[in-house]
Length: 384
Image (cartoon, rainbow, N blue to C red; front, top):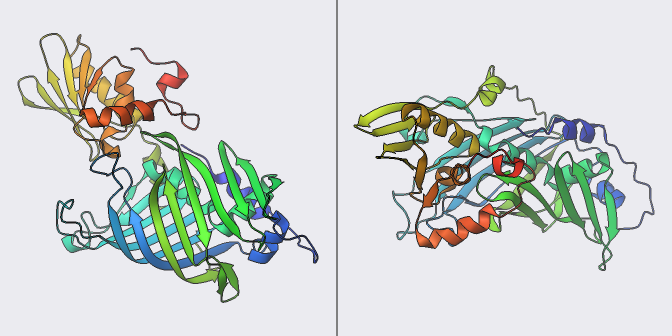
């Protein structure tokens, strides 16, 4: 679990007094120009595009694209709280759609290191009751999004002893560490935060580069804010929003639902249901695997989510089919939610069976640094 509370408390206490006559393009001047010394919360809304990274038909293709008709982000910097409400529909692409596009409504929350989602399973058209479920796998991304806003970055930089390096275009590159996370931002000569990059952990890609670019700054009712925000993750588009309105210092009170923290921290469980002689359905959550008993080994189909889930599945498979090694892991496709735990099987000693077109992608991804969330290979704990 990644802890962001320390960053939130430090940013809440940060206050930079900007004096007249300071040189432009510096951290202090940007704090003054963008109001980061007195803006403690912000809400911005707009429309644009959202991209479903990790669900590409092939790793070499761009991610599925969604038209966003409404995007509302509400952030409180003091408590590291963020809520995103988004209405979207997949962009029509007959060659790639499995189903007709339908409207989806996302309601996502993060408070410190607790994250959850609220909505109807399967979308609003189902009519099913609204549910609130923990979303631990996305907590780091959502927490990161708080500090890759212009005012959030400036507040965090002031609170975390940022270093500044002048650039050749009369701007400044600002760098700071927030716990394990490094943030680097560019302030231009107009005292605007032009871009920010940082890294978060991804089960497939390791330390994944995340970048945000801000253009078209203008006055939104007394708040200088970009009119366009473009974010990328792992080199692919994630979000492209045209901002239509901004509110400074809205009241942001989002209580953590009862039991949510405990639910996020609960250990992963796996169960085994016999489907046929020697064939077992390994369940747990909404992502499943299949284990097949062979004469002198075991074959497992799919490795969903991450190392934690794979370790639970491996333990259940060995309990269900004792005294045999897992020799093969069949990877049905490269979607991140089905492939995030593959690396665990590699170091369990299994051979990954996949399409040749995906081999180079996996080999490259597994060589990437994993400093933010070291797995068993990095820690030297694997047994294979």
